[in-house]
Each structure stands twice: as structure tokens, then as C-alpha cells.
Image (cartoon, rainbow, N blue to C red; front, side, top):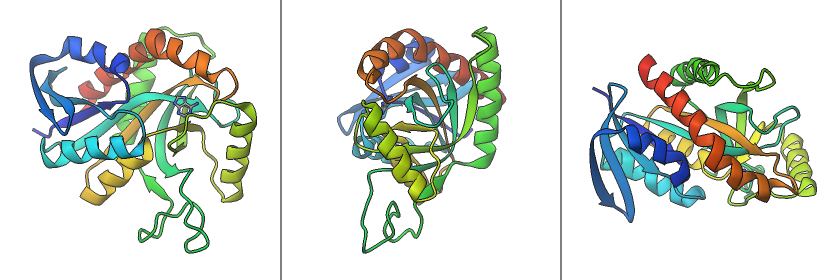
Length: 243
Ligand code: ADE
């Protein structure tokens, strides 16, 4: 049976999954804890990406090399960047890019050197399942009708975006390069690139915790604790049932 890695950015998001994990077995490796076990009938490994692209790349590589996972699912929170992407909405990623990568003029802005591309696509089949699971998971939570499910590009960078002016500038810069990002976070593009390198299917879902504006640092911690973990649990339950 293919082993599924479930990667969360923060411990608050992982706790609900750990509580449900059957036959849990903890391994400490590369300064991280990896939890193997069974969840909703599937073999899984739960891990924390930690924050930032380098940390996320280390965790992803370890999941693939050491724990032999055959697919990676990322759940976490993100700042809403696109118009109409509001706090409480959910974004299923179709692609990732690094908004803080700039090797110009040697390479076009945002392009990852020697890959000839700036965007890394998520696995289409896994992403279709994740969309279906997100729809079902959100329905089960009986959320307000205004809660939207988006799908599209997410931009990652080693920076917490916490200002309206900064967020607007980032959006305009990305649009200048032809990139319309729905949300911003700090790990997804790294995981996507590692999965690309190893040929491991990858899908990601992010709940919007803030609008990456002046209130972001206030909205973020409250949201992660009270809301995001419930969303993640519901979506992951439906996703594992669909595999
Ligand atoms: N993750 C959640 N909110 C974020 C923000 N505003 N900037 C970067 N990463 C985030």
C-alpha cells in the first residue's frame, strides 16, 4: 500500500491528526519527529514542515528518502492575496512558485535556475481528489455560505507578509511576470520542487488565515488555533477515504 505523508506547517494543525493516529510510532530523524501509523484506513506518516522553504525541503526529502512515502499531502494556512480570497476561505493549489526567487538578469525573474520554469504543478489526479475532499469536508463542518473554495496558483517565500502595501506590491510584481497568485505562504513551493525532483505526487490545501495585510499578525495565531486545525482534519478525513 502506498504510504501517504501528511505534512503540516505547525503543531497546532497536526495535533488533531495525532490524536486520531492508530498504532502510532515515533521516529526522530534530522531533528524532527515523524509519526507513522494508520489514519482512516490508510498508512500514513505525519510530519511538520516547520516554517520556511529550507525547513520544508528537509522534511520532504526525509519523508521520501527515509520513510519511503509515495505521495505527499500538505495542509496549512495561507495569507489571501488574490481578489476575493477571504479569511476562512480554502485554496487548493494547482501550482506553486517562489515569489522571492530572483536570479535576474541571469535568468528570468522567478525562474528556478536549471529547471527552465518558475511554476511547479501539483499532481492533477491527487489535486482532483483533494478538491472533492475539500468540498465534502467543508460541507461536513456546516460553514457559513460565504466560505469559498478556490483553486489555483500559490506563491511561497521566506517572509510573513503583514502589510497591505507590501501585499499589494507583491501582487503587482507577480502580475508583472504573468502570475496571478491566490494566496501566499512559506513552504509549498519547496515541497513541490522536492516532489518534482523525486517524481512523487504532491497536493496541497491551505485555509486562508489572514489577508497578508496590517492585521495579519493578529488574525493568524487565533485562526490557526481555533479554525485551521478543524478544517484540516475534516478535509484529510475525506481525502484518505477517497484514496
Ligand atoms: N501564512 C499564513 N499567512 C501568511 C502570510 N501573511 N504571509 C506568509 N505566510 C503566511
